[in-house]
Image (cartoon, rainbow, N blue to C red; front, side, top):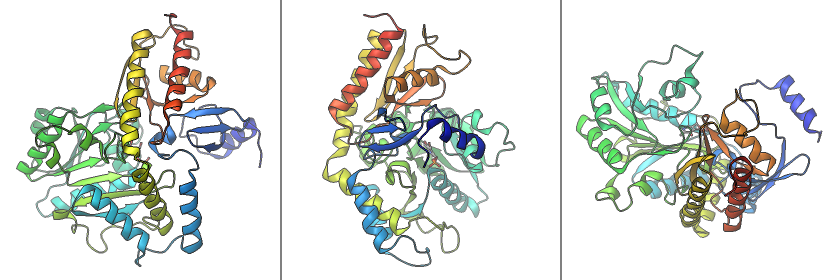
Length: 420
Ligand SMILES: Cc1ncc(COP(=O)(O)O)c(C=O)c1O
């Protein structure tokens, strides 16, 4: 083992495909809401691996589940049955409603499953097209970038796969106008994550359901980033529709999950509502690693902890107070933070244009430069595009940790902007 940051970075430069723009940080270990770099510096991790480490780093319950299950059975082929996959599917069905689950390893792969579901659904009537939203993000596979509503992910990989078209988000009329005889499904995020934390309106969600029923289209929701209790309910569409007339009755036909589902272990899944749950019959879809005993045992334990420790409630309450803290900062430092938004523990700070005295290469996006400043001050956040930083902390974040994050932000804002 080589503890030297420069040496580790050199290993990457020589041997790892440079597809990521990485920050200048070499991390070594973590505990709870904190990670440590190889020099021993501590960071408050409000990014949680992009909404993945929902119980923080190295939670003892996750370690225990990994150890216990790894002594019993790590992997078997999906030719066979085993208890953890059956039990995890049952838990997800209980959370979502009558239907069935398929297990895979990532969000991109979960969305691939939904694309295949839509193709199978429309096949007999010659329909294959899936409409998605501008600014959406659905993964880095070839179908994922074809579905994604951001040009930057498609660039250099054209031609895109046929059968995907993007329409403005939160605009039902635009969607209705875009329907063609080939349209089979609509796929949306209830809160766009990579797109900068933009939530669907309740009317949009309810209107989508109605339109899909009317036109016999599948309504598919990508819950990879905003799901798993991050906003205070299992799925963010449930939070968005709380208290809205007829909101309780809203249910998509398919839902993709990943990220927090495995808490750091690569676990993905998609759920399909009962009427369509048999569409992908034997031999139509598969994954060697998907739904392994190890992955499912960990995902089950994470659900137990979330339930036992009432972490959905924590995400809601602490998220609300963190958001009001961010809003106060944006009022105090309008030249640095233009606005704060989000739901639960899925929050975003939109940076003001041309922040004075922001260090770093002016050709680099402000979000990355601001994130660098926060790193120096001991805080990890996640950029979304050039102007937005996301906070996607563990669901078990504690109030003093949230306050510590706000204090660090305030110090950095003070340095940049005018001291109030
Ligand atoms: C909404 C959404 N869908 C899909 C994906 C892709 O997931 P993965 O990177 O696990 O393939 C992401 C990843 O950020 C996402 O945010």
